[in-house]
Length: 270
Image (cartoon, rainbow, N blue to C red; front, side, top):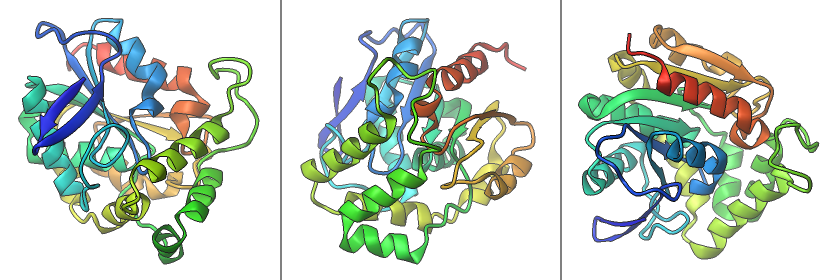
C-alpha cells in the first residue's frame, strides 16, 4: 500500500489485507538499513488473524521515497503523519532496534495514538561507537558486514526458520546491501547517527502508561542485556520475554517472537 506523506510515497506492507476500521491495528517499524520485510512472518500472521497491519518502510528505505530522516523525533512525526493518512487512530506499535526508539518517542509525543508498545532489541541510550559511525560514513559495505556478523548469534540455521535453504545471515546482508543500492545517500550512517543522538529516551520511557512488552535476544551483542536495565526499570509495568537469538531476533527466532507478540496483543486490557 502506498500513501503520500510529506509529498512523497510512503510504502506499507499490509499482509495482503485491506484496512478494516472495525479491527485493531498493529504497526511494525524496522531498524537501521532494513525495510518492512524483516517482519515477514509476524506481519502476515497478524493480518490474517484479526488485525490491520502496516509494516512500514521508513523514508529512504525500501519502497518509501525521500531522504532518510536524521533524527528519531523526525521519524516519529513522519510515522504519525502516515497513521493519519492511513486512517489509523490508535495502534499497537512494534519496533525493532532503531524502530523501537521511534515507537517509544511516538508513545511520548502522541500517547493517545498508542494502545500498546512492543520494543524488540531495544536499549537506551542506544549509543554507537565512533569507529562504527565512521565506518558507516566512509565504508558502508564494511559497516554492513560488521553489523551483520554482530547481529546474529551464529551462522547455523535455527529450527524455526521458514524452511530448508533459508540463510538468515545472507538474507540480512543482502537486504542491507539492497538499501545501499537503491539509496546512495548514506542511509546506514544517517540511521546510526539518529540512534546515537537520540536524547529523549528517559523522558519518553517515564511517560509510558500503556501495556508494554520487551523482547530481547539472549545473545544480542548490539543491544546486550546489561544495557537494557534503564528502559525496563523505568517502564516497570512492562513484561520481558527473552528468546535464544542475537539482535536479528525476528529472523533467528521468528516463531518465538510471533508467539510473544500475538499473546501480548490478544491479552485482555488490564
